[in-house]
Structures are given as C-alpha cells and as structure tokens.
Length: 462
Image 1: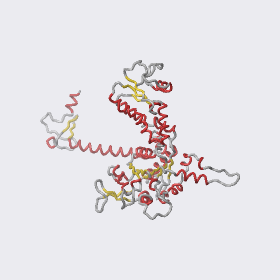
Image 2: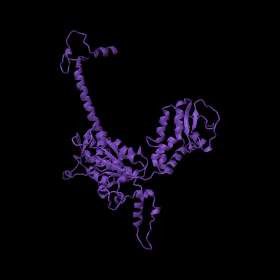
Image 3: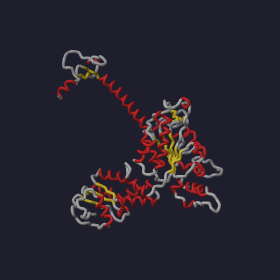
Image 4: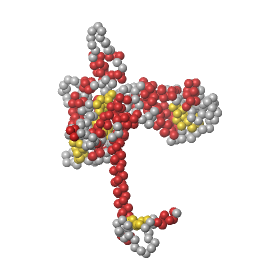
C-alpha cells in the first residue's frame, strides 16, 4: 500500500509522454517539481499559491475567533477571572462590565440592533481606576483581562513620567510601549489596554500654590488628560528617537482602554473623616467614631471627591468615572491564593520539584502559617513568594543533586525555621525517625501522604 501511494504521488515521470500541470498548464520542463496524483498533476508554483491562500484564510478565521472572544459577556469574563484571582468580587464585576462595554463600543459601532434615531449617538469611553493596598491583585486583574480579551497590553509605572522637556519619560512613550507589544501593528494597538501603575505617586504635593513647577506630579496629570480622553499621538518607529525629522506613525487613543491603579496610602483617613462627619447632631443622633470604621468598609466607600482631596486634579478624575476599590486580603483569602487558583504559588513550586522527579507537599498548617507571616509583614499576596522561597531555599539547593529523595513535605515548623522540611527517601522503608516531630505535624503528614501504606507507621525525618 505504501509503495502504491509513493508511486501515485511521485515527482518524476516514468513515461516518455510530456506532462503538464492540471491547474496552470505549465509543462514539466518549465517547473521545478511536478507532483503526480490519480490522473492529475500539480506543479510547485501552484502548491505555493495554494499554501498562501490557506494561510490567509487561517489568519482571517483566527481573527474572527479573537473578535468573538473580545465580545464575551461580563459573566463570562468574571468566571475566567475567578480562575486566577481570589476574592475582590466587586472589583471583578466592575472591571468585567467596564471592559465589555468598552469593546462593545469599539467593535459594534454599526450594530443593526441600534434604532435609527440612536445611530448618530457617540458613546464615549469610560476608563477605570483601581484603588487598593499592595498585594491585593490590581496588576494581576489587569493582566488577566488583557489575556482573556486577547488585545495588546502595556504596563507603565507612573513614577517615571514627567512633563515634556524634563528629564524622564514623557506621556507619549506610554503609547510607544503599547505599539511595541502589538508588534508595531497600529490598528491592533489602537484597540489595546494601557495599564498605569502607581498613579497615586503623581498626586499634587500640596493643596496650596507652589513656587516651583510640579513636573512629576500635577504636571503629569495635566499631560495625560488629552491622551486618556482620546487624541492622535506621534510615535517614533522602532529604532528611532522622537526628534525633529524622525519617522513617526500616528496612533489614535480613542479606542484604547486606560486602567490606572494605586495604593493611595492614607486615603482611608480621608474617607473615614467624611463618613464620621456625615452624622446628625442632637441627643438622639448616632455618632460614628472614625477609628471604629473597618478598613475594608472605608475602601468600598471611596468617591471621586476623596481622590481629589488626596491630590488628584478634578479634570483627571473626570476621565476615570469607574472606580474599583480592592480590599485588603484576609488570612483566609491568602490561604486560598496559595492553593486554589490555576497558577497557585504552591502548584508552581510543586511543578519545579516535579521536574527533578521529587514530590512536594505543603501541609495545611504550613499554608496557614505562610499566610499569617504575609499578614504580619503587610505585603499581601505579593509577599507570599518571598516566604515560600525562604522556606524552600535550602531544599532547592540540595535536592536536585540527590536522586534518593522521593518526597519533601513542608510543615508548620519548617516555615517558622524551627526545623527543616521532612524528607522521604526512596530506600527508607520502615526506618525510625531521626528527628522527632510534634504529634500535630505527624498527623498532618499522615493525612497528606499520597502513597501511604500504613497510617500507623512513623514517618522518616532527616
């Protein structure tokens, strides 16, 4: 059968009769290759042409799928966010709705569902501001949304921005980064997302007039106004600097979604003062003590006026009508962050050790202790990796070169540096413990051992 197929699709002629391409009619002598099929022939030129047609069609199909992906409904976007982000329900809902409305406005401008009397109505974009403490998931939410929607995404740190003409990056460089992430495709970049972090660092330095120019604070806010609202920006081509006479391209920011975020450290005091003052007076009045207001309650009640009092100018805040407040993660949230998401931190380290043929296990108490340390350090989810790295530092140094190690178990004491993680070796068998563990950790290890043969046997510890 194989020989028949080989002969059927041979590129050489066995007979003396001249052969011609069945598609373009060229003779075998005029082409490099002539592929023979059942009573049909095709030359290399026609094959290349067919290949180009198929590639073009596959690109258009993939763009169609991406287009449909961009128009996912808010519930679908939130469900995907839930796979990566723990908690922050209200923020995820607001972001999902904002992103859906934005791209509906971009891609469905000429929708046949719109009545005739509304076709001339222009829908302006609504940019988003996220406010929350460090390690609460602001950057992760923005990155995940960009992946879900499949659009170019650029991250910028607001602390590096200055007014044009001063040392530092001007605001137009933000669009240049987005263009780079879109592989210099202008049309694709004009539908992307720009995420500006640390936006609270460009707040006004004082409420009163200043004798010096605030080039990295209020000046940057003013420079961002036109860019955020929608304007045409001249961006230098790759390899060129923005200078007179250099080649540039025009990028329109009308359809670019801007998401800004910041910790706004101290804004909770501004909100608490407002909430405590909004009480009535008199013998029967209820008095609210600002010191007794929970931090998460304060953060969920942030308004535009609060951000203006903090130092943002009214013109800038007017271009960010959607404010999504993120709450501080609790210990229970951090425990879930460590184990539940698709790319959970514990799963990442399990995979790293699995590459060396070693099973890694975290006990329940160990995960809870890691979360407690992150709470104590006030670093949120961002500080979890540093704690896990410190706990596994010695194991990651020694284990890869030791082929006898079967499993490493991280328990409560190893997180607190009271002892090393428990090591189970392939040839341990029924050896006794060399280091006595607490009953609490022994029972934990018994419960979490995957290949446990007898729960009454003691675990080997080195």
